[in-house]
Length: 133
Image (cartoon, rainbow, N blue to C red):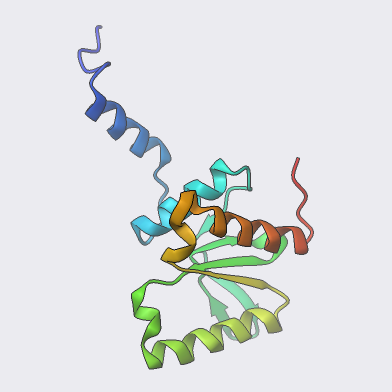
């Protein structure tokens, strides 16, 4: 059967988006971050997986690399609220106490092709024992 939409740009973009979609992403910026990391050759991250850090302490990072104990959090505008800042500090302390490296990113890290975000995550993975293939 002939695919009459084969050359249609809108259809091609929709197919590509479906191929790149992953269950578990909370936002479009998180998806753009994940895709930038993968394009740069970093391993595929897990999305929003509950992670036991210590007895009774479970965190759910936006992206994670459990085998390297690296968590990545994309922090939007809501993270500038005073109560959220307190929660974010506690979260970072929980990761550090469990031997995890927490990478905190914002929209400024996503400019210029997300080079800054990729560099931060890459440094974290390397410091936690990852080596590129």
